[in-house]
Structure formats: structure tokens, C-alpha cells
Image (tube, rainbow, N blue to C red):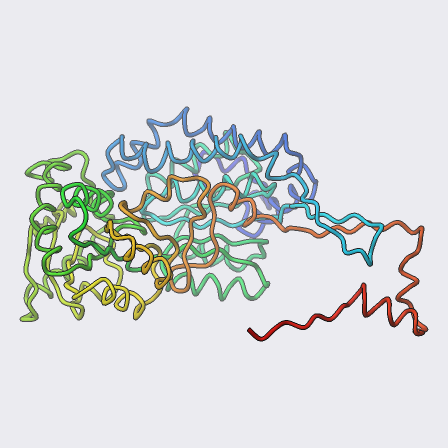
Length: 486
């Protein structure tokens, strides 16, 4: 916690509270029942909205300090994204929480059945550094709307944003949300506590650690991971517009986006056309010198810079046919990597793991089916992007690939549709959220059955069993049905 806000925490023998005590405090608040009324939930959402709007300049400055984000990109992908999520949730929350009636079989009549959503309790949200504001607060929108209390752990790799959150959250969401700053030790201690749901966004390696820790208490988890999200493109599309959209999705936030296009698959003909247009699209977005563009970000830290540039250098040094299309310049002092496009083969170093940086490999395939086979042979990605006007190709990708999302004609934009669930599958994640899907994630759907004591029709299935009861049970309560084999 920010030092000037330590006095907001309970004290133990004159010392600031421990992580354990902070979690206990969140549970005590939840156990009072104060979080369950709709009015409380809406109040918290509106308070969070006020926080990000009142301190837009503070959060924008923090995002610029951490990642070099332009204020407009910060609004599009972080601040405005959160306010839009809040507005959508506030508008629909009452309807989402309405109990759902369920039909009751004739054998149990008279009776009424329904399901209701009830909050889980205390939720832990662990956020990454690449979208440090959005990916902490957007899950919290759902958790609070579902009636939970929340402990939030922002990333220590985005220290300015983490400090801003620790500074302002207590003023607007005091009690409902607690921010725990720090690094691995604090995260480890948090994972030792009992939560009712853990929501983690990051990589698969840490995701496994989170899942193992959660298993000790049988705590449900949502894991928003990543992976190599592929693009397929063919000759049927407007290559100029396609190149512009691919460049936007790839190089936004300097490529440090979990749903960024990781590589492009296409025939020789399609990739040749795309390779001609991508440098022009990059120039349109960031100018002839992206290093001087205020709209182009920087790599988060030296380790990430070294990893990305190392992969690029290895592929350019190998005799495997890698060829630079554009970009390639770097500056370690400013952690700048120029938007880079490179032809590689499937065995290239850049093709082994998620790049998470501004390098876009182009990989040649003979056909759409070979591209599908290529995708099928790898881990299930967070997203697949298809640029084709061929209905058959679109249908084949829909039916034959599995991914968290499938977009036609645009990368990344599905995140801005609040009605769509966002999440991965397999190695790219477990569970989903956004809009109504967040409420389902952070709630338990409880079954309710109400059967009057009179008349007691249940007596028809009580022992002892005679011929009449046998017929009632076989015909109405547990009937058997034969199905035709064809």
C-alpha cells in the first residue's frame, strides 16, 4: 500500500496489517451482507467510474511512464474501456440479477423452481503489466457487480500505475476493494490465503502456480493467459485495409497485447502483397521514424527487450531463409524496437513462443487448409484472425479451429463488444468475462425448489412399492425412452 494510506488499514500491535489480515477484513465486510443489495453494487461501480474520470490525467501519466502510452491509446484501451464496461454493467445489472424460472416436471407438481445468482465472497484479482489499469479494474467491475469484495494485486512491473491505483482506490472504494502493492513475495503470500475466486491475467507458467495454489482450497479460478494468435490472409481481400488493421492490432502498445496478431499465414502470392502494404501501413500509423512518434510505445523493461531482440537476431543470423521485410532497428537505452516485419519458416525462433513485442513473422503456407492444419497442430490460441472474403474459407476456419475468439477482418476488436465473452481455451486460458459473462464468473447460480407440503404428491414415490407406484415411477417420474439408431 502507498505509505500515506497505511492508516486506512487495521493495526496490529501498532504495525500495518498483514496480507492475511487484509483478506480477513475483506471477508468480514462480505459476511455483514452489505455487498448484496443492488444499490450497494451500483454505488461501487459508479464510484469506480468517478475515480478513473476524476483522475484521468494521473492514470494517463502513469501509463505513459510505465509503457510510453499515448493519451489517446490510454483512453481507448484502458480508461475509456473501463468506463464503457461500467456503463454497460450499470445499465443491465438489475436484469442480469433477476431470478430465472425453471420448468418443473409434472411428477413434482405443484412446485416452483428457479435459479438465483449469489456472490461468491472475496475475490482476488492479479493483474499484468501490459494493460495495468484495464486488466485490474475490468475484472473488478464484474466482481463488485456480482456483490463480492475484492483484493487487487497490480503488477510491480508497472510501478507508476500500481502506485496510482494504491493512491486513489482507498478514496473511492474504501473497504470494497483493497490494493496490495509489491512483487513476488506479496503475490505468494496472497496465494496462501483462502479466496472464493482467483482471477489471474498473465502467462501460462505463473498460471500453473496460481492454479496449484487455488487447488489447496478448491478455489475456482479464471486464467486469462495468451499464446500465439495467428492471422490467415488470402488474395480475396482488400490488402491495403487488411494491412492497416493488422498493423494496428500488432503494434498497438508496442506489440505487448495478449490478443495481438502473433504471426501471419498465407500463400506466397498473398504474403507478397501484404509485405508490400505493411510498411506503408506502419508509416501511416507511426510516421517514417516510429522512434519519434508519440503514438508508439516502448518495451516494458530490459529483460523483455533483450528477449525480443535476441529472438530477432537469432532468426536473422540463421541460414534458414529468414528475410527482413521492414523495421529491425532497436535502441536498448530507450527500450525501443521498431515495428518489424520478417519472413520466417515454421521452425524459426520467433515461432516457438508468444512474441509479445513488435515483431510480425510472415509464414508461407500452400492453402487455407494447410493454415488450418498448422493452427490445429499447436496450442489452442487466444484468438484466430481470418482475412478472407471466401465463404468456404470462413466456414472452414469456424468449424475446424478452436480458439478463445475468431475474428473475421479485424484483430483484437472483439474486446470492445461487451456482449461477447473474453477468454481462452486450453493453454490460452480458463473461463471468460466481460459484461454479463463477468457476473456469471463471479457468482454462484443457486438452484431453488419450492414444493408445498399439501397436497403431498410425493407419497406416490415413497416405499413400500406396489404396482400402482411402479407404474407412476416408470411413466412419470423416471420414464425410459428408446431412440432410433439412425
